[in-house]
Length: 169
Ligand SMILES: NC(=O)c1ccc[n+]([C@@H]2O[C@H](COP(=O)([O-])OP(=O)(O)OC[C@H]3O[C@@H](n4cnc5c(N)ncnc54)[C@H](OP(=O)(O)O)[C@@H]3O)[C@@H](O)[C@H]2O)c1
Picture 1 (tube, rainbow, N blue to C red):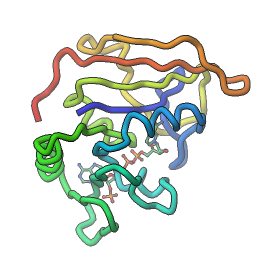
Picture 2: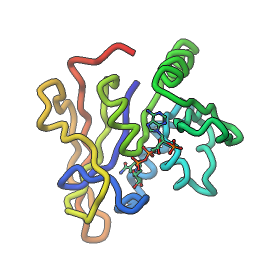
Picture 3: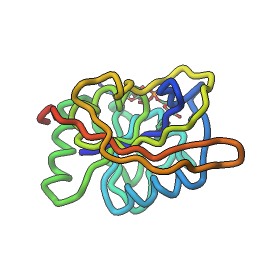
């Protein structure tokens, strides 16, 4: 399993239920990376998707503690054990799995991920949700970075990190 996230200078990922910024090229990158594979998403982040629906062209695994929660076109899991089983099943079927957030789900799953695709936006937003600062963790190292990209006056970069001590699922 890998993960994909967009962070600011403080590794912030969102505020009041929404992402701080939507950069079209970053959205395109997200589509390219995840298309045809499986994604793991928290119930709160799912609600921010268009019409609150699973993303097309991908197997969507949604985590919620609510056993009455249903959504068409997604596999709903209710705890970490069910989640791990669902991830293993999809991987066994030959698909890649991407953790796509939000904060709670990243926190739960990042130790199990091999690669992190991190879009870094050079700005400090007001935020209430954060991703762990991988630069401060010994077992995560940068294995790729892009040149500077710009969106209006915003500068951003695409980084790839590798976890050298992956926790087994
Ligand atoms: N910058 C980025 O790349 C990025 C990407 C994705 C999201 N985001 C942002 O992240 C924020 C949302 O993150 P969040 O942490 O508030 O929510 P989240 O991780 O999307 O979803 C949290 C929900 O997942 C369920 N959940 C989490 N752990 C669980 C467990 N162990 N067992 C059962 N259910 C569990 C719960 O659902 P129930 O309440 O239904 O039980 C919980 O309320 C938003 O601001 C969003 O825009 C940013």
